[in-house]
Picture 1 (tube, one colour):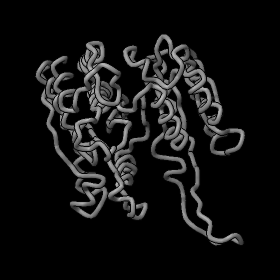
Picture 2 (cartoon, rainbow, N blue to C red):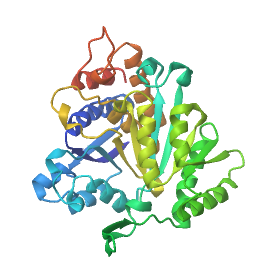
Picture 3 (spheres, helix red, strand yellow):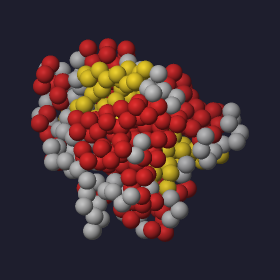
Length: 356
């Protein structure tokens, strides 16, 4: 099979982790007889430097023409003084909206070999941890009406949180479908005791749950959900929540695993088209030092193989190679323990590729 991938290397450590991910994808192609074609396009800070825009029209067109998008990371202090609509991070919002990427999947796993890296007590994560946060990605406060108005207390700014029935319906179905393939448990997180948008959210999620009688549905307020993630994370299987709550909770979930450098993500549209990127940011402070952990980007490529290309065996090969890397005692700088010599970014990519 032949697949066309639009690749955004991005900023900071983005190009470095993408380079190692390409190595691993090529190793998968060699083993299983696939060909991956890479079309490198600009977005984020690099695009601003070259074209003056964070998301050129050519990039959107190339992404739409591809089978999937693979993205490193965007942003950095170099562009912090730009107006909000011109900052590198706006490229992500633009891609999500243009490509219809309404469902963000963020797995939060604790590998047995890395249990000591978690900031939680061993007894809390004993036996492993495997959570998926399903975040609505193209609605809510990030895309609602926004602006400024004069008040008797001076200038005020506002951002509107708004959800339609269909927006909630389609993200709920993604969560319940995923739960059916896992442990058949969905926790919907909202703020229905305060927000009208959350009350609508809760009602629609309950309606969808009726179509999945084998799946248990729990509802939880977001403040309690944030607390429960660090108090008893193993109670969760699939979490479904809004754009802003998902943004916060998925980052919290990533930290309890011990290293954000190990966590991938997928953003999906109807028809399984997707954009795949590591959860971590551009980390400009370590760019060029060889200390970046490429595992999150590599595992994101594994998600691409599984969810967009339907290549389950090939995705398993990537996940098994990462697991074998850890079992062999190999470590990157962010997860190194005393007595181990961490591998550089490039050495990590070489090692994982050899284990495919």
